[in-house]
Length: 314
Length: 307
Image 1 (tube, helix red, strand yellow):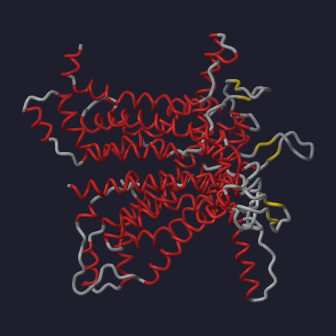
Image 2 (cartoon, chains in turn green, purple):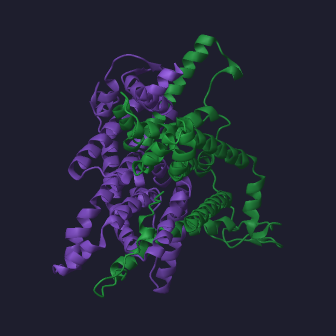
Image 3 (cartoon, one colour):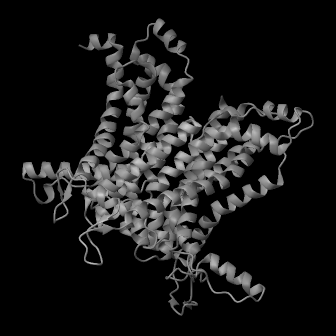
């Protein structure tokens, strides 16, 4: 999210014998404490995904592999062929989880693709062209930042329910053919909150863009489309990609908008976990969280590695 | 027609921006206007909306009640005002705590060796990328009566032979505050880091040359120059805290009710969208007012986009 390359290029040096990187003990220790605060809950969460106790209130050791054992709350824990990874095996068998994971990915991929394309178009328009609605367009991009998500969520819910009510009523739709909340409404809503972020990120990238490259291409006889494809796009691509990555993570993480716009069959992982938290919590929820955290962590590491490799090549 | 479009720059711009505008108008502006219209409506017996122009929902929010104990027709019931006030003060407390925690860490990262900065920054982002709901759940595990914190405290007390009764931490306002701080901390660290990182090192040297000590340099150079980051971070923290309902739902149980919970219940349990819409408009107006005065005083940094 902060891909500012400035600090990579100019490693500043200490002057007059002053070490600029010296660690003030107060700053150092408070920074470390904040890191502990950030990580302790996650570590506990991961540890509990190996918990023998189904009630999952205290940690009762790992799930046994060979012989059953009695844990402190008096309940018997059956040995599992998966051993400590028992809850992960249970997770893999869970059809609801698989469906929720599939929905989450579908929503994230489709909304990222659409919002990256139309957001980039809007960024180009706002940065390059003069048109009547420009100030209004620019201002509207800040709406999702300054308005609480829940306000957007219930607004969209009201829109869809009223709209579908009118359409179903006037067309006389009944039963399964009725329009209702589902994957479609979730995707459309996710695009709505991702687009402004993509547009703003790409716009920031376009700001430092030298127009003379495009003018040179046009002088050499390239038409507008070729110029865009061969000159503009390659130059703004890093901005478009970081915008897309932002849109993707926003969509994966979203709870509030999805909560108000989903319907039967469009449950996402965050909604599914929320549902479990209000009912019964077994270590399976922790196993799901662990898988989620490790997946995100490895994807980000790979992206970071690719980016570093790219930076080294140039 | 295609030729005319090729020559008309204004039409090209409008065309390029139109899909995004369609989404902004259709899914942000129209829903907001619809919320406004619905908030003046009345609830039908089956939970639908009867469109009318009545201020009943707003009057009810500000304390007018027809459900009174002593047989009166109407009385003052501050329930909803209390909820609004609770949300506002929680958002304020969260923001202050988050600034206090985020600043030293952001400062530490900004002054770290350039080669290590990315790693430290990355370590702030990882918790942010674990899901919001999962992070609330993690705190639920920590704060339970038999949870990890009480276990640790009990062990410590045992070491010193002090009698220990587990603390009731979950389902208290404190639990909600901790949860909120945890959820939104990275949103403050990133913009503060961005503005600290921009400060030219020669400014520190100049301050040192002119005889300023560490504290004075911080107060007169570092802090003022990092204000855009603090402002951006405050907007990124304050606004979502005002509207979040999961943290209070999971960590506050039914004890801590915020505006977000009030709105959510009107749409799902109580089935009174008109009252929920009125509450969400009041919430929006509150955040806009706070943001307006805050940014007018301190300016509106571009850091908000960087984060």
